[in-house]
Amino acid sequence: MGSSKEYLEYILEQLSDLDDISHRAMMGEYILYYRGKIFGGIYDDRFLIKPVKIAKEMMPDADMELPYDGAKEMLLVDDVENREFLKELIEAMYDELPAPRKRKK
Image (cartoon, rainbow, N blue to C red; front, side, top):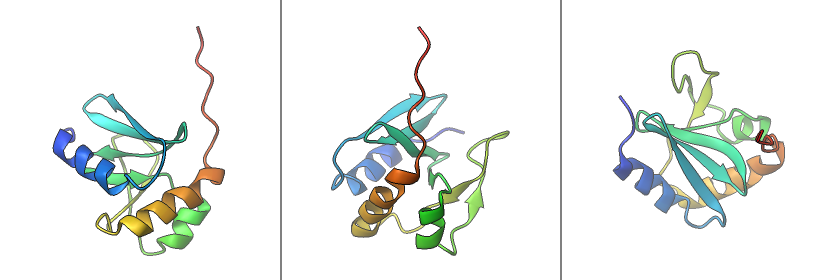
């Protein structure tokens, strides 16, 4: 199905209290980065994040969903209206996120 540009813009606005948020379009969806590390994405107009330990602790009742067929499950962020919580969540996740992979030339 793919995600709408409008939903991406809404999520980016909700995350605008964070410095250094970026995104990349990929096959109709959007990968989200915080300070160079992938933390989640927009998939079928759903905001999903990596299921790192702190994210599971901060969202104990969150549903696990597949971003696309064949992918690993991710946590669904329901409370996208709460900007303060989103900022705390993404900042808390940063140290648990894997370092960016080096691209081969």
